[in-house]
Length: 478
Image (cartoon, rainbow, N blue to C red; front, side, top):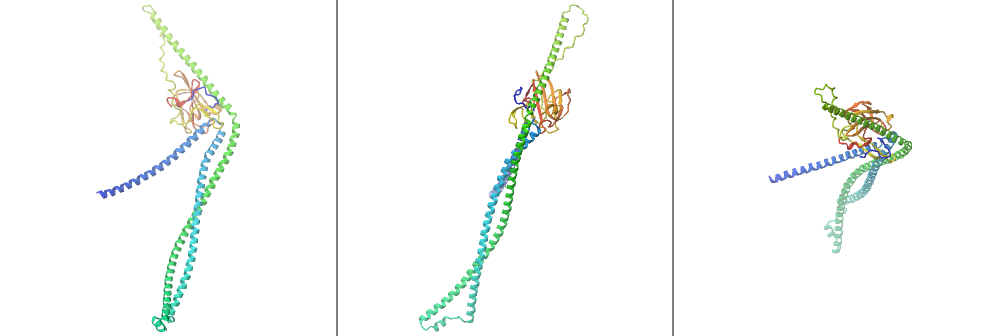
């Protein structure tokens, strides 16, 4: 990358059984379709996650590429700050979800506790009712026992005959008989009350058994609700602590970034100087290319003129038997047809994936605009890079000679289609060629690296045409 703060000089770029069977088949098909829908939904969800991950990776690669040419420490601080900013909304979403889960867990805990209190109160009331009923049953049974014993002894045995014989008058008989009937009805009522009380007690005991079982279930549910609430509370606390740490990191990184920016401000002039020096060097090469091309054309023109002169002299000789003349120089071989402009260039790596395009882009730290004179392509560390076309290696420069560009290879392809072409390859890990070496298209000239001021391994490829950069991705071979 050759960042500058001014425009580049270059351009920018059976019926029932059958029905039953049919119903079964239909049900099976429905089940299969539902299963398929579930599988598709699961696959869609997984695909969404994959796409989101790829989007994040592409965004990260874009940010990294935009930092090409930035001081390594400053770029690292900026990336850490950007990572912290990216983590913050995720952590906040997790905290919101955790707080929602905590509120739900606490509501459930309160609901279960309320139901448990009601069940225990009902159990206590049933205990009291059972105790009172037991006392009533015992008292009734005691009265019944005493009555049975009196009847057995004959103490209270009064027959209808005795009532008749002992009565002195009709009124006396009727009164005595009424008393006897009342006593019988009272005994019958006591028996009925005893039976009723026993039935009520049985129902109460059954209810108490059910309530006791429910209390056990509610206690287990309450314990589980307490555990869930504690876990949700702990998760919310963890996410809150994570957010606080991220915010603290962002504060510290922002301060560190500001400090480093002030230190880096003086490097911008150096970057512009490096870019200008590269442009001047390429201009000198272009001038040399054009000088050599002009000399070649002059030699060809002189050779054609000499050939024509000799041919004319030979035709004009009048002697019948001329002496043998010196052999004329062989006519120059016809020049190979010139390739159309830029059609001869090929990509330096296969499977092109642009991580940062050619052209102006915003400098992410200061917000200024700068010109990205090449294109950044994805390539793993150590992958070979190839010569875009045949030519001569002009230079193989180490990082201390290129400033931010790291290991750099420059190849002069000469004049093609009337235009001068030079290609530049930056940030190589090591070289595979040396200055002055002739290379052919597709020959390995070096290996992908991360030398210079970059944040990771990638290809930085530039094409210079007539002294100005052009967008490589607009070339026919790309």
